[in-house]
Length: 135
Image (cartoon, rainbow, N blue to C red; front, side, top):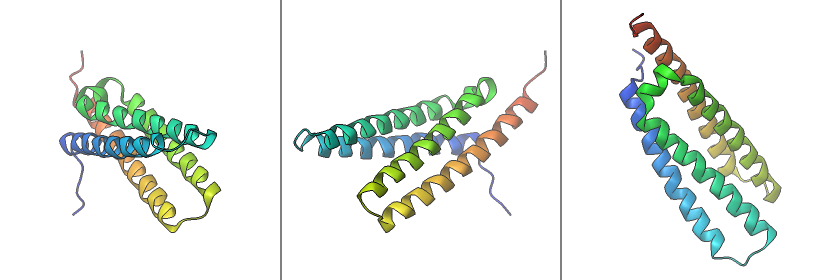
């Protein structure tokens, strides 16, 4: 029997993944800020700041998920699409250094998780709209 995500479990996923990403984003920024200032350092810090922004957005979605599913699920979908584009762009930027097997594994896992989230957000949003009382 297939396991179906609930609003509660999806909420926990958004919050926990946002906090974990936030932690790793701040670690990456700390490493970048310890090196000498160069165009590459500025680029990496900018990428880190955008990553922190996505992390905060995931935490926000997790905190307000039930209401967002009913009122503006399209914003969650846009966040997931933007996260997908960002993951692909950062992967392509990492290829400029060299092809690393770890980066390939990370992008594949990231894209699978984002696809899973998108599918479940759409399903839970449709269920929330069906169960909402009509006026």
